[in-house]
Image (cartoon, rainbow over the protein chains, first blue to last red):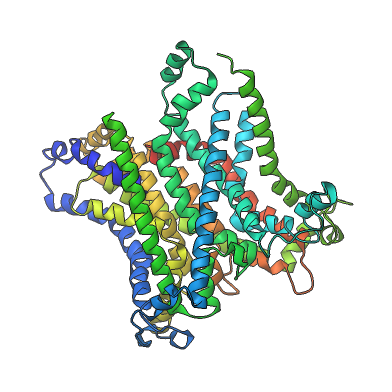
Length: 330
Length: 279
Protein backbone atom coordinates (compact mmCIF):
# COMPACT_ATOMS: atom_id res chain seq x y z
CA UNK A 1 0.00 0.00 0.00
CA UNK A 2 2.67 2.43 0.92
CA UNK A 3 4.95 1.80 -2.02
CA UNK A 4 2.71 3.98 -4.09
CA UNK A 5 3.65 6.93 -1.97
CA UNK A 6 7.26 6.35 -2.94
CA UNK A 7 6.54 5.36 -6.49
CA UNK A 8 4.39 8.26 -7.48
CA UNK A 9 6.98 10.99 -8.03
CA UNK A 10 9.14 8.59 -10.00
CA UNK A 11 6.33 7.80 -12.38
CA UNK A 12 5.65 11.45 -13.08
CA UNK A 13 9.24 11.98 -14.12
CA UNK A 14 9.06 9.24 -16.74
CA UNK A 15 7.71 10.28 -20.12
CA UNK A 16 4.11 9.13 -19.70
CA UNK A 17 1.20 11.21 -20.81
CA UNK A 18 3.24 13.56 -22.94
CA UNK A 19 4.51 10.80 -25.18
CA UNK A 20 1.08 9.27 -25.65
CA UNK A 21 -0.76 12.51 -26.29
CA UNK A 22 -0.32 12.89 -30.07
CA UNK A 23 -1.74 9.45 -30.84
CA UNK A 24 -5.45 10.06 -30.55
CA UNK A 25 -6.88 13.54 -30.92
CA UNK A 26 -10.45 12.36 -31.37
CA UNK A 27 -12.73 11.82 -28.43
CA UNK A 28 -10.81 14.11 -26.13
CA UNK A 29 -13.67 14.25 -23.68
CA UNK A 30 -13.86 10.49 -23.58
CA UNK A 31 -10.15 10.23 -23.06
CA UNK A 32 -10.18 12.69 -20.20
CA UNK A 33 -13.14 11.07 -18.49
CA UNK A 34 -12.12 7.47 -19.13
CA UNK A 35 -9.78 7.08 -16.15
CA UNK A 36 -12.51 8.46 -13.89
CA UNK A 37 -15.05 6.03 -15.34
CA UNK A 38 -12.66 3.16 -14.69
CA UNK A 39 -12.18 4.33 -11.13
CA UNK A 40 -15.84 5.01 -10.45
CA UNK A 41 -16.85 1.63 -9.00
CA UNK A 42 -13.84 1.49 -6.70
CA UNK A 43 -14.41 5.08 -5.68
CA UNK A 44 -18.10 4.61 -4.88
CA UNK A 45 -17.44 1.50 -2.80
CA UNK A 46 -14.59 3.08 -0.90
CA UNK A 47 -16.85 6.02 -0.20
CA UNK A 48 -19.75 3.89 0.99
CA UNK A 49 -17.85 1.42 3.11
CA UNK A 50 -14.78 3.35 4.26
CA UNK A 51 -14.97 7.10 3.93
CA UNK A 52 -18.61 7.76 4.86
CA UNK A 53 -18.47 5.42 7.88
CA UNK A 54 -15.26 7.08 8.95
CA UNK A 55 -16.90 10.50 8.80
CA UNK A 56 -19.90 9.17 10.70
CA UNK A 57 -17.58 7.58 13.22
CA UNK A 58 -15.94 10.92 13.87
CA UNK A 59 -19.32 12.62 14.30
CA UNK A 60 -20.47 9.80 16.60
CA UNK A 61 -17.46 10.29 18.81
CA UNK A 62 -18.83 13.70 19.78
CA UNK A 63 -22.24 12.33 20.69
CA UNK A 64 -23.70 10.71 23.73
CA UNK A 65 -24.52 7.53 21.89
CA UNK A 66 -25.97 4.78 24.03
CA UNK A 67 -28.27 1.93 23.11
CA UNK A 68 -31.33 4.19 23.35
CA UNK A 69 -30.26 6.12 20.26
CA UNK A 70 -29.26 3.23 18.00
CA UNK A 71 -32.49 3.39 15.97
CA UNK A 72 -31.75 6.96 14.98
CA UNK A 73 -28.28 7.93 16.01
CA UNK A 74 -28.54 11.49 14.66
CA UNK A 75 -30.93 12.41 17.48
CA UNK A 76 -28.43 11.53 20.19
CA UNK A 77 -27.43 14.57 22.25
CA UNK A 78 -24.05 16.19 21.65
CA UNK A 79 -21.48 15.65 24.31
CA UNK A 80 -18.68 17.74 22.90
CA UNK A 81 -15.35 16.35 23.96
CA UNK A 82 -17.00 14.28 26.70
CA UNK A 83 -16.22 10.90 25.15
CA UNK A 84 -12.62 11.89 24.61
CA UNK A 85 -12.28 13.15 28.16
CA UNK A 86 -13.58 9.84 29.47
CA UNK A 87 -11.22 7.91 27.19
CA UNK A 88 -8.08 9.77 28.21
CA UNK A 89 -8.88 10.26 31.90
CA UNK A 90 -6.26 7.75 32.97
CA UNK A 91 -7.15 7.95 36.65
CA UNK A 92 -10.72 6.79 36.06
CA UNK A 93 -11.55 3.15 35.20
CA UNK A 94 -12.45 3.62 31.49
CA UNK A 95 -9.35 5.64 30.61
CA UNK A 96 -7.12 3.49 32.76
CA UNK A 97 -8.30 0.33 31.05
CA UNK A 98 -7.78 1.94 27.63
CA UNK A 99 -4.23 2.99 28.51
CA UNK A 100 -3.47 -0.51 29.78
CA UNK A 101 -4.90 -2.04 26.63
CA UNK A 102 -2.80 0.35 24.53
CA UNK A 103 0.44 -0.70 26.25
CA UNK A 104 -0.46 -4.38 25.96
CA UNK A 105 -1.12 -3.88 22.25
CA UNK A 106 2.16 -2.05 21.67
CA UNK A 107 4.21 -4.68 23.52
CA UNK A 108 2.38 -7.50 21.78
CA UNK A 109 2.76 -5.90 18.34
CA UNK A 110 6.49 -5.21 18.72
CA UNK A 111 7.19 -8.75 19.90
CA UNK A 112 4.98 -10.41 17.31
CA UNK A 113 6.28 -8.37 14.36
CA UNK A 114 9.88 -8.86 15.49
CA UNK A 115 9.50 -12.62 15.79
CA UNK A 116 7.54 -12.96 12.56
CA UNK A 117 10.19 -11.00 10.71
CA UNK A 118 13.05 -12.93 12.29
CA UNK A 119 11.62 -16.38 11.65
CA UNK A 120 10.37 -15.49 8.17
CA UNK A 121 13.71 -14.01 7.11
CA UNK A 122 15.75 -16.88 8.55
CA UNK A 123 13.54 -19.46 6.85
CA UNK A 124 13.66 -17.64 3.52
CA UNK A 125 17.47 -17.32 3.63
CA UNK A 126 17.98 -20.93 4.70
CA UNK A 127 15.75 -22.08 1.88
CA UNK A 128 17.32 -19.95 -0.81
CA UNK A 129 19.35 -22.77 -2.39
CA UNK A 130 17.82 -26.01 -3.46
CA UNK A 131 18.00 -29.09 -1.25
CA UNK A 132 15.96 -32.25 -1.05
CA UNK A 133 12.43 -31.69 0.21
CA UNK A 134 12.59 -27.91 -0.21
CA UNK A 135 9.41 -27.69 -2.27
CA UNK A 136 7.45 -29.76 0.24
CA UNK A 137 8.75 -27.76 3.17
CA UNK A 138 7.89 -24.49 1.47
CA UNK A 139 4.32 -25.66 0.90
CA UNK A 140 4.03 -26.83 4.55
CA UNK A 141 5.29 -23.50 5.84
CA UNK A 142 2.53 -21.67 4.03
CA UNK A 143 -0.23 -23.74 5.65
CA UNK A 144 -0.67 -21.52 8.76
CA UNK A 145 -1.08 -18.51 6.49
CA UNK A 146 -3.61 -20.27 4.27
CA UNK A 147 -5.77 -21.73 7.06
CA UNK A 148 -8.85 -19.67 7.89
CA UNK A 149 -8.25 -17.77 11.12
CA UNK A 150 -11.10 -19.31 13.09
CA UNK A 151 -10.15 -22.87 12.14
CA UNK A 152 -6.50 -22.36 13.03
CA UNK A 153 -7.07 -20.39 16.21
CA UNK A 154 -9.77 -22.75 17.50
CA UNK A 155 -7.20 -25.55 17.24
CA UNK A 156 -4.89 -23.50 19.44
CA UNK A 157 -7.78 -22.96 21.87
CA UNK A 158 -8.07 -26.73 22.12
CA UNK A 159 -4.32 -27.08 22.64
CA UNK A 160 -4.37 -24.46 25.40
CA UNK A 161 -7.23 -26.13 27.32
CA UNK A 162 -6.49 -26.56 30.99
CA UNK A 163 -7.56 -30.19 31.39
CA UNK A 164 -7.42 -31.77 27.97
CA UNK A 165 -4.98 -29.60 26.05
CA UNK A 166 -1.71 -30.62 24.41
CA UNK A 167 0.31 -27.76 25.90
CA UNK A 168 -0.32 -28.72 29.52
CA UNK A 169 0.06 -32.40 28.69
CA UNK A 170 3.52 -31.83 27.24
CA UNK A 171 4.73 -29.24 29.78
CA UNK A 172 3.33 -30.93 32.86
CA UNK A 173 2.71 -34.64 32.26
CA UNK A 174 5.54 -35.37 29.85
CA UNK A 175 8.33 -32.88 30.58
CA UNK A 176 7.40 -32.13 34.23
CA UNK A 177 8.38 -28.49 33.71
CA UNK A 178 5.48 -27.03 35.66
CA UNK A 179 4.34 -27.98 39.15
CA UNK A 180 0.70 -28.08 38.17
CA UNK A 181 -1.16 -27.54 34.90
CA UNK A 182 -1.33 -23.84 34.05
CA UNK A 183 -4.20 -21.76 32.70
CA UNK A 184 -3.35 -20.33 29.30
CA UNK A 185 -6.48 -18.55 28.19
CA UNK A 186 -7.03 -16.59 31.40
CA UNK A 187 -4.58 -14.71 33.60
CA UNK A 188 -1.07 -13.56 32.75
CA UNK A 189 -0.17 -16.52 30.56
CA UNK A 190 -2.76 -15.41 28.04
CA UNK A 191 -0.29 -12.84 26.68
CA UNK A 192 2.14 -15.59 25.70
CA UNK A 193 -0.64 -17.77 24.33
CA UNK A 194 -1.78 -14.92 22.10
CA UNK A 195 1.78 -14.15 21.03
CA UNK A 196 2.45 -17.78 20.10
CA UNK A 197 -0.67 -18.01 17.96
CA UNK A 198 0.00 -14.66 16.32
CA UNK A 199 3.58 -15.59 15.41
CA UNK A 200 2.53 -19.05 14.21
CA UNK A 201 -0.05 -17.49 11.90
CA UNK A 202 1.93 -14.43 10.84
CA UNK A 203 5.50 -15.51 10.08
CA UNK A 204 4.68 -17.23 6.76
CA UNK A 205 3.68 -13.86 5.33
CA UNK A 206 7.14 -12.49 6.13
CA UNK A 207 8.60 -15.68 4.64
CA UNK A 208 6.62 -15.17 1.40
CA UNK A 209 7.63 -11.53 1.01
CA UNK A 210 11.29 -12.09 1.85
CA UNK A 211 11.43 -15.05 -0.55
CA UNK A 212 10.04 -12.79 -3.26
CA UNK A 213 12.60 -10.13 -2.32
CA UNK A 214 15.49 -12.61 -2.47
CA UNK A 215 14.68 -13.37 -6.09
CA UNK A 216 15.49 -9.78 -6.99
CA UNK A 217 19.06 -9.84 -5.68
CA UNK A 218 21.44 -10.21 -8.64
CA UNK A 219 23.41 -13.48 -8.58
CA UNK A 220 26.54 -11.58 -9.69
CA UNK A 221 26.75 -9.91 -6.30
CA UNK A 222 27.20 -13.28 -4.61
CA UNK A 223 29.63 -14.49 -7.26
CA UNK A 224 31.76 -11.38 -6.89
CA UNK A 225 31.72 -11.74 -3.10
CA UNK A 226 32.67 -15.42 -3.34
CA UNK A 227 35.60 -14.51 -5.59
CA UNK A 228 36.71 -11.99 -3.00
CA UNK A 229 36.72 -14.82 -0.47
CA UNK A 230 33.55 -13.99 1.48
CA UNK A 231 32.02 -17.03 3.21
CA UNK A 232 28.35 -17.92 3.31
CA UNK A 233 27.65 -16.12 6.60
CA UNK A 234 29.49 -13.03 5.39
CA UNK A 235 27.52 -13.00 2.16
CA UNK A 236 24.29 -13.13 4.13
CA UNK A 237 25.39 -10.27 6.36
CA UNK A 238 26.96 -8.09 3.70
CA UNK A 239 24.76 -8.75 0.66
CA UNK A 240 21.48 -10.46 1.49
CA UNK A 241 20.38 -8.42 4.49
CA UNK A 242 21.29 -4.97 3.08
CA UNK A 243 19.64 -5.82 -0.25
CA UNK A 244 16.45 -6.71 1.57
CA UNK A 245 16.16 -3.30 3.17
CA UNK A 246 13.53 -1.78 0.86
CA UNK A 247 11.50 -5.00 1.07
CA UNK A 248 11.75 -5.00 4.85
CA UNK A 249 10.56 -1.42 5.12
CA UNK A 250 7.28 -2.27 3.44
CA UNK A 251 7.01 -5.67 5.11
CA UNK A 252 7.47 -4.36 8.63
CA UNK A 253 4.96 -1.57 8.16
CA UNK A 254 2.35 -3.97 6.79
CA UNK A 255 3.00 -6.49 9.56
CA UNK A 256 2.80 -3.74 12.15
CA UNK A 257 -0.55 -2.44 10.92
CA UNK A 258 -2.06 -5.92 10.57
CA UNK A 259 -0.90 -7.07 13.98
CA UNK A 260 -1.82 -3.85 15.73
CA UNK A 261 -5.32 -3.94 14.25
CA UNK A 262 -5.84 -7.67 14.56
CA UNK A 263 -9.21 -8.57 15.93
CA UNK A 264 -9.80 -12.09 14.64
CA UNK A 265 -7.05 -13.84 16.59
CA UNK A 266 -7.82 -12.51 20.10
CA UNK A 267 -11.56 -12.75 19.47
CA UNK A 268 -11.47 -16.43 18.54
CA UNK A 269 -8.90 -17.18 21.24
CA UNK A 270 -10.63 -15.43 24.14
CA UNK A 271 -14.15 -14.48 23.06
CA UNK A 272 -15.90 -11.15 23.53
CA UNK A 273 -13.80 -9.95 26.45
CA UNK A 274 -10.11 -10.77 26.55
CA UNK A 275 -8.18 -11.34 29.79
CA UNK A 276 -6.47 -8.21 31.05
CA UNK A 277 -2.98 -9.39 30.11
CA UNK A 278 -3.98 -9.89 26.47
CA UNK A 279 -6.54 -7.13 26.06
CA UNK A 280 -5.72 -5.93 22.54
CA UNK A 281 -7.11 -2.58 21.52
CA UNK A 282 -9.46 -3.85 18.79
CA UNK A 283 -11.22 -6.22 21.18
CA UNK A 284 -11.20 -3.55 23.86
CA UNK A 285 -13.05 -1.12 21.59
CA UNK A 286 -15.40 -3.87 20.48
CA UNK A 287 -16.20 -4.63 24.07
CA UNK A 288 -16.69 -0.97 24.96
CA UNK A 289 -19.09 -0.60 22.03
CA UNK A 290 -20.99 -3.83 21.62
CA UNK A 291 -20.86 -5.40 25.06
CA UNK A 292 -21.30 -2.36 27.28
CA UNK A 293 -23.25 -0.55 24.53
CA UNK A 294 -21.39 2.70 24.72
CA UNK A 295 -20.96 3.60 21.08
CA UNK A 296 -19.92 7.19 21.73
CA UNK A 297 -16.92 6.23 23.85
CA UNK A 298 -16.12 3.38 21.46
CA UNK A 299 -16.03 5.84 18.56
CA UNK A 300 -13.83 8.27 20.46
CA UNK A 301 -11.41 5.42 21.21
CA UNK A 302 -11.44 4.45 17.51
CA UNK A 303 -10.60 8.00 16.46
CA UNK A 304 -7.75 8.17 18.99
CA UNK A 305 -6.45 4.85 17.67
CA UNK A 306 -6.64 6.16 14.12
CA UNK A 307 -4.72 9.31 15.05
CA UNK A 308 -2.03 7.19 16.68
CA UNK A 309 -1.71 4.96 13.61
CA UNK A 310 -1.55 7.98 11.30
CA UNK A 311 1.24 9.54 13.35
CA UNK A 312 3.23 6.30 13.60
CA UNK A 313 2.85 5.52 9.90
CA UNK A 314 3.71 9.09 8.95
CA UNK A 315 6.83 9.08 11.10
CA UNK A 316 7.82 5.66 9.78
CA UNK A 317 7.44 6.75 6.15
CA UNK A 318 9.33 9.96 6.83
CA UNK A 319 12.09 8.10 8.60
CA UNK A 320 12.46 5.31 6.04
CA UNK A 321 12.27 7.53 2.96
CA UNK A 322 14.88 9.79 4.57
CA UNK A 323 16.97 6.75 5.27
CA UNK A 324 16.52 5.74 1.67
CA UNK A 325 17.58 9.15 0.35
CA UNK A 326 20.57 9.21 2.65
CA UNK A 327 21.73 5.79 1.49
CA UNK A 328 21.23 6.85 -2.13
CA UNK A 329 23.49 9.86 -1.60
CA UNK A 330 26.35 7.77 -0.27
CA UNK B 1 30.57 -23.12 -3.62
CA UNK B 2 29.41 -25.66 -1.06
CA UNK B 3 27.89 -24.11 2.06
CA UNK B 4 30.03 -24.50 5.22
CA UNK B 5 29.10 -27.10 7.84
CA UNK B 6 28.00 -24.44 10.31
CA UNK B 7 25.46 -23.21 7.79
CA UNK B 8 24.18 -26.70 7.04
CA UNK B 9 23.79 -27.55 10.73
CA UNK B 10 22.05 -24.29 11.56
CA UNK B 11 19.73 -24.89 8.66
CA UNK B 12 18.93 -28.42 9.74
CA UNK B 13 18.19 -27.47 13.35
CA UNK B 14 16.23 -24.35 12.48
CA UNK B 15 14.09 -25.97 9.82
CA UNK B 16 13.36 -29.01 12.00
CA UNK B 17 12.18 -26.89 14.92
CA UNK B 18 10.14 -24.68 12.62
CA UNK B 19 8.50 -27.67 10.95
CA UNK B 20 7.48 -28.95 14.38
CA UNK B 21 6.07 -25.57 15.37
CA UNK B 22 4.09 -25.34 12.13
CA UNK B 23 2.84 -28.91 12.05
CA UNK B 24 1.85 -29.65 15.65
CA UNK B 25 -1.46 -27.76 15.44
CA UNK B 26 -2.13 -29.35 12.07
CA UNK B 27 -1.50 -32.78 13.59
CA UNK B 28 -3.78 -31.97 16.53
CA UNK B 29 -6.50 -30.88 14.14
CA UNK B 30 -6.27 -33.99 11.97
CA UNK B 31 -5.79 -36.56 14.75
CA UNK B 32 -8.44 -35.12 17.06
CA UNK B 33 -10.96 -35.08 14.26
CA UNK B 34 -10.67 -38.87 14.13
CA UNK B 35 -10.97 -39.46 17.88
CA UNK B 36 -14.02 -40.61 19.83
CA UNK B 37 -15.46 -37.96 22.15
CA UNK B 38 -14.01 -39.58 25.29
CA UNK B 39 -10.49 -39.03 23.91
CA UNK B 40 -10.92 -35.28 23.52
CA UNK B 41 -12.73 -34.60 26.78
CA UNK B 42 -10.19 -36.47 28.92
CA UNK B 43 -6.43 -35.97 29.09
CA UNK B 44 -4.76 -35.18 25.80
CA UNK B 45 -3.42 -38.22 23.96
CA UNK B 46 -1.00 -38.11 21.05
CA UNK B 47 -2.53 -41.25 19.55
CA UNK B 48 -6.29 -41.90 19.44
CA UNK B 49 -7.58 -44.87 21.46
CA UNK B 50 -9.61 -45.81 18.43
CA UNK B 51 -10.07 -44.24 15.03
CA UNK B 52 -13.55 -43.14 14.06
CA UNK B 53 -15.03 -41.08 11.26
CA UNK B 54 -18.11 -40.42 13.40
CA UNK B 55 -17.21 -36.70 13.91
CA UNK B 56 -17.22 -36.17 10.15
CA UNK B 57 -20.79 -37.50 9.98
CA UNK B 58 -22.03 -35.68 13.06
CA UNK B 59 -20.71 -32.22 12.15
CA UNK B 60 -23.45 -31.80 9.55
CA UNK B 61 -26.28 -32.38 12.02
CA UNK B 62 -24.94 -30.78 15.23
CA UNK B 63 -25.01 -27.41 13.47
CA UNK B 64 -26.34 -26.62 9.98
CA UNK B 65 -22.80 -26.70 8.61
CA UNK B 66 -23.89 -27.10 4.99
CA UNK B 67 -25.88 -23.87 5.17
CA UNK B 68 -22.95 -22.00 6.71
CA UNK B 69 -20.64 -23.47 4.12
CA UNK B 70 -22.94 -22.31 1.33
CA UNK B 71 -23.19 -18.83 2.88
CA UNK B 72 -19.42 -18.53 3.14
CA UNK B 73 -19.00 -19.76 -0.42
CA UNK B 74 -21.52 -17.26 -1.81
CA UNK B 75 -20.19 -14.34 0.21
CA UNK B 76 -16.49 -15.04 -0.40
CA UNK B 77 -17.04 -15.95 -4.06
CA UNK B 78 -19.10 -12.88 -4.87
CA UNK B 79 -16.75 -10.59 -2.95
CA UNK B 80 -13.74 -12.07 -4.77
CA UNK B 81 -15.17 -11.79 -8.26
CA UNK B 82 -16.42 -8.23 -7.82
CA UNK B 83 -13.28 -7.03 -6.09
CA UNK B 84 -11.03 -8.46 -8.81
CA UNK B 85 -13.08 -6.91 -11.63
CA UNK B 86 -13.27 -3.52 -9.93
CA UNK B 87 -9.59 -3.60 -9.00
CA UNK B 88 -8.57 -4.45 -12.59
CA UNK B 89 -10.33 -1.34 -13.93
CA UNK B 90 -9.04 0.92 -11.19
CA UNK B 91 -5.47 -0.35 -11.40
CA UNK B 92 -5.51 0.01 -15.20
CA UNK B 93 -6.58 3.63 -14.89
CA UNK B 94 -3.83 4.37 -12.37
CA UNK B 95 -1.16 2.45 -14.25
CA UNK B 96 -1.86 3.79 -17.73
CA UNK B 97 -3.33 7.29 -17.38
CA UNK B 98 -2.29 10.53 -15.84
CA UNK B 99 -5.22 12.42 -14.47
CA UNK B 100 -6.09 15.01 -11.91
CA UNK B 101 -6.53 13.58 -8.43
CA UNK B 102 -4.64 10.37 -9.16
CA UNK B 103 -2.34 10.80 -6.21
CA UNK B 104 -5.18 11.68 -3.89
CA UNK B 105 -7.06 8.59 -5.05
CA UNK B 106 -4.21 6.16 -4.56
CA UNK B 107 -3.17 7.57 -1.22
CA UNK B 108 -6.75 7.59 0.09
CA UNK B 109 -7.62 4.11 -1.10
CA UNK B 110 -4.40 2.60 0.09
CA UNK B 111 -4.42 4.30 3.46
CA UNK B 112 -7.79 2.76 4.26
CA UNK B 113 -5.78 -0.45 4.59
CA UNK B 114 -4.17 0.84 7.73
CA UNK B 115 -7.41 1.51 9.57
CA UNK B 116 -8.63 -1.08 12.04
CA UNK B 117 -11.81 -2.88 10.99
CA UNK B 118 -13.37 -1.98 14.31
CA UNK B 119 -13.37 1.66 13.16
CA UNK B 120 -15.84 0.90 10.37
CA UNK B 121 -17.89 -1.66 12.23
CA UNK B 122 -19.93 0.71 14.39
CA UNK B 123 -20.83 3.26 11.71
CA UNK B 124 -21.42 0.62 9.06
CA UNK B 125 -23.67 -1.24 11.48
CA UNK B 126 -25.66 1.96 12.00
CA UNK B 127 -25.74 2.81 8.29
CA UNK B 128 -27.03 -0.64 7.37
CA UNK B 129 -29.62 -0.63 10.14
CA UNK B 130 -30.84 2.90 9.39
CA UNK B 131 -30.83 2.30 5.65
CA UNK B 132 -32.92 -0.80 6.24
CA UNK B 133 -35.41 1.12 8.38
CA UNK B 134 -35.65 3.99 5.90
CA UNK B 135 -35.74 2.18 2.58
CA UNK B 136 -36.46 -1.44 3.33
CA UNK B 137 -33.18 -2.53 1.71
CA UNK B 138 -32.08 -5.19 4.15
CA UNK B 139 -28.31 -4.88 4.16
CA UNK B 140 -27.96 -5.69 7.83
CA UNK B 141 -28.04 -9.41 8.36
CA UNK B 142 -28.02 -10.10 4.61
CA UNK B 143 -25.36 -11.70 2.48
CA UNK B 144 -25.36 -8.59 0.28
CA UNK B 145 -24.23 -6.37 3.12
CA UNK B 146 -21.43 -8.74 3.98
CA UNK B 147 -20.32 -9.04 0.34
CA UNK B 148 -20.22 -5.26 0.05
CA UNK B 149 -18.13 -5.00 3.20
CA UNK B 150 -15.69 -7.76 2.32
CA UNK B 151 -15.09 -6.57 -1.18
CA UNK B 152 -13.82 -3.25 0.05
CA UNK B 153 -11.46 -4.95 2.48
CA UNK B 154 -9.59 -6.68 -0.30
CA UNK B 155 -9.99 -3.83 -2.78
CA UNK B 156 -7.14 -1.55 -1.60
CA UNK B 157 -4.63 -4.40 -1.46
CA UNK B 158 -5.83 -5.72 -4.83
CA UNK B 159 -5.54 -2.34 -6.52
CA UNK B 160 -2.10 -1.82 -5.02
CA UNK B 161 -0.83 -5.19 -6.21
CA UNK B 162 -2.36 -4.87 -9.67
CA UNK B 163 -0.88 -1.41 -10.28
CA UNK B 164 2.55 -2.92 -9.73
CA UNK B 165 1.68 -5.82 -11.94
CA UNK B 166 0.24 -3.73 -14.78
CA UNK B 167 3.28 -1.45 -14.63
CA UNK B 168 5.43 -4.46 -15.43
CA UNK B 169 3.45 -5.16 -18.62
CA UNK B 170 5.24 -3.14 -21.31
CA UNK B 171 3.21 -0.12 -22.39
CA UNK B 172 4.24 -0.69 -26.01
CA UNK B 173 2.00 -3.76 -26.10
CA UNK B 174 -1.29 -2.05 -25.33
CA UNK B 175 -0.29 1.08 -27.23
CA UNK B 176 0.22 -1.07 -30.30
CA UNK B 177 -3.26 -2.49 -29.73
CA UNK B 178 -4.66 1.04 -29.50
CA UNK B 179 -2.96 1.97 -32.78
CA UNK B 180 -4.41 -1.15 -34.37
CA UNK B 181 -7.89 0.09 -33.54
CA UNK B 182 -8.61 -1.51 -30.19
CA UNK B 183 -10.47 0.69 -27.75
CA UNK B 184 -8.90 1.27 -24.33
CA UNK B 185 -11.09 -1.45 -22.87
CA UNK B 186 -10.14 -3.78 -25.70
CA UNK B 187 -6.47 -3.13 -24.97
CA UNK B 188 -7.07 -3.84 -21.30
CA UNK B 189 -9.02 -7.05 -21.84
CA UNK B 190 -7.00 -8.44 -24.77
CA UNK B 191 -3.47 -7.41 -23.89
CA UNK B 192 -2.98 -6.24 -20.32
CA UNK B 193 -5.23 -8.70 -18.49
CA UNK B 194 -3.85 -11.83 -20.22
CA UNK B 195 -0.29 -10.67 -19.59
CA UNK B 196 -1.05 -10.04 -15.93
CA UNK B 197 -2.87 -13.30 -15.17
CA UNK B 198 -0.48 -14.35 -12.37
CA UNK B 199 -1.07 -11.06 -10.59
CA UNK B 200 -4.82 -11.32 -11.06
CA UNK B 201 -4.84 -14.88 -9.71
CA UNK B 202 -2.80 -13.76 -6.71
CA UNK B 203 -5.26 -10.97 -6.03
CA UNK B 204 -8.21 -13.36 -6.32
CA UNK B 205 -6.62 -15.83 -3.89
CA UNK B 206 -5.94 -13.06 -1.43
CA UNK B 207 -9.46 -11.64 -1.70
CA UNK B 208 -11.03 -15.06 -1.22
CA UNK B 209 -8.90 -15.85 1.82
CA UNK B 210 -9.71 -12.49 3.39
CA UNK B 211 -13.44 -13.05 3.01
CA UNK B 212 -13.33 -16.73 4.02
CA UNK B 213 -11.46 -15.97 7.23
CA UNK B 214 -13.17 -12.77 8.40
CA UNK B 215 -14.71 -12.99 11.87
CA UNK B 216 -15.53 -9.48 13.15
CA UNK B 217 -18.15 -8.36 10.63
CA UNK B 218 -19.50 -11.86 10.22
CA UNK B 219 -20.24 -12.07 13.92
CA UNK B 220 -22.08 -8.75 14.08
CA UNK B 221 -23.75 -8.55 10.69
CA UNK B 222 -25.25 -11.99 10.14
CA UNK B 223 -28.37 -13.70 11.41
CA UNK B 224 -29.45 -17.34 11.71
CA UNK B 225 -29.93 -17.85 7.99
CA UNK B 226 -26.96 -15.86 6.69
CA UNK B 227 -24.38 -16.99 9.25
CA UNK B 228 -20.98 -17.84 7.77
CA UNK B 229 -18.53 -20.52 8.85
CA UNK B 230 -16.58 -18.01 10.93
CA UNK B 231 -19.52 -17.68 13.30
CA UNK B 232 -21.17 -21.04 12.73
CA UNK B 233 -18.29 -23.07 14.13
CA UNK B 234 -19.02 -21.65 17.57
CA UNK B 235 -22.14 -23.81 17.59
CA UNK B 236 -20.18 -26.94 18.50
CA UNK B 237 -19.72 -25.85 22.08
CA UNK B 238 -22.88 -26.17 24.11
CA UNK B 239 -23.41 -25.44 27.79
CA UNK B 240 -22.79 -29.06 28.70
CA UNK B 241 -20.27 -30.30 26.20
CA UNK B 242 -17.63 -29.05 23.87
CA UNK B 243 -17.46 -31.43 20.92
CA UNK B 244 -13.78 -30.91 20.26
CA UNK B 245 -13.55 -33.80 17.84
CA UNK B 246 -16.37 -32.31 15.79
CA UNK B 247 -14.87 -28.82 15.99
CA UNK B 248 -11.59 -30.19 14.64
CA UNK B 249 -13.37 -32.15 11.91
CA UNK B 250 -15.39 -29.12 10.88
CA UNK B 251 -12.28 -26.90 10.96
CA UNK B 252 -10.53 -29.33 8.68
CA UNK B 253 -13.47 -29.48 6.29
CA UNK B 254 -13.70 -25.68 6.00
CA UNK B 255 -9.92 -25.36 5.63
CA UNK B 256 -9.41 -27.86 2.85
CA UNK B 257 -10.81 -25.71 0.01
CA UNK B 258 -8.73 -22.63 0.85
CA UNK B 259 -5.53 -24.47 1.74
CA UNK B 260 -5.70 -26.61 -1.39
CA UNK B 261 -6.43 -23.59 -3.56
CA UNK B 262 -3.69 -21.60 -1.91
CA UNK B 263 -1.04 -24.29 -2.27
CA UNK B 264 -1.98 -24.84 -5.92
CA UNK B 265 -1.78 -21.15 -6.68
CA UNK B 266 1.04 -20.10 -4.36
CA UNK B 267 3.49 -19.78 -7.25
CA UNK B 268 1.29 -17.07 -8.70
CA UNK B 269 0.98 -15.45 -5.31
CA UNK B 270 4.74 -15.20 -4.93
CA UNK B 271 5.02 -13.87 -8.49
CA UNK B 272 2.27 -11.36 -7.77
CA UNK B 273 3.89 -10.22 -4.55
CA UNK B 274 7.23 -9.79 -6.31
CA UNK B 275 5.70 -7.50 -8.89
CA UNK B 276 3.25 -5.67 -6.65
CA UNK B 277 4.74 -5.44 -3.23
CA UNK B 278 8.44 -5.75 -3.48
CA UNK B 279 9.20 -3.23 -6.16
